[in-house]
Amino acid sequence: MANVKKITIDWNMTGLTIYLIARREADNYRLNDANGDFAVNPADPYLSLTEDPVIKGRYELSESRAVWGNGRYTIAIYKQAGGSPAPVSDTIIGSGDIYIINDIEVVVDAAISSRAAEETVAKEATLATVVGYIDTEITAIINAISALQTDLGDPSADTTTLYSQLLLVKGYVDTLETAIASHEAARAAMQIALIAEHDATQAAVAATLVINVMSATKGAIQVSYAKTGGTVEVIKGDTISIPYGPLGKNITTRKLFFAAKQALGDTIYAIAVKEITAQVTDFTTFTGTIPLTSAETSLTPGAYYAAIESRDPDGVSQPVEEIRFILKIVEQIIL
Image (tube, rainbow, N blue to C red):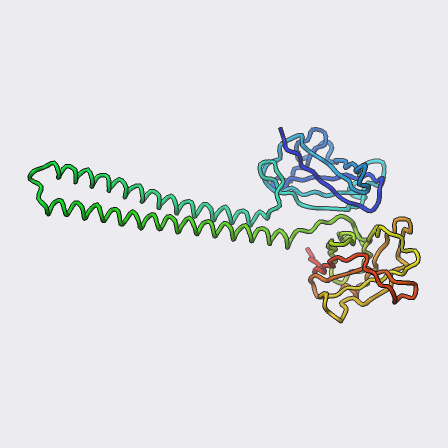
């Protein structure tokens, strides 16, 4: 039986029709919703996501009809506008990668995994050589002891011959001890290498894992909606509006402000404090957008600490941080 592969996306609107297209990167085959298999031209490549009845705004899909082979799979998620899926005109609201090993989703970088596998193979080969050498020395010791026993039973054997045989046995034992020490050193080195590869894998995944779940108003950009603990990716120099919310509380009598810093302790703002009260789009759920100009996003590429703050009507007193997130500025790649 195939394992369950679960895909989830959170959105700040309920009651939407959401679907996805899943592609196997090894051969560019797409998942066929008709039978759960991958095909070059599937009859129905659109898989519907279902909104959670309790966690409103969370859309999910569980797929377990067939075993997925090892490798990388990419997911594109769309918000359906018309009566049927139309990726050409529908808005893409999310994308991501899934790595499968033994029909189980793993969080790992394929290149790092390959390096770890190569390191393991190399160390196993070294250990096999050492173990083979130990086997040879043990055989030599057994043969030497057998010869010694033969000499002890022979009255013609003199003391010199016996002493020579004992020295031979001692030499084999010393060689065996050296081989065992080499074996232990090689095993320890392999453990250290694998631990280092594991740490590198975790660091690489943490540095590259970005989940995109909402489109900005400029169609060519994919960004996350601003939420505490989240990351929003923006192309340097673009003019965009970043969605946020819901805030989860009533701020009707307060004003909203936005700003960004390169470091939390900085006294100089990378994006100066600006009021965004007018950009609240829904006073029921308290959602809205953060408008950023080309000049404001023309920052040195990197991560910035960004926040939305509410204040009293005078725009100064009783400041409360409502949302803090990472604003990531990236260079545009021209293909």
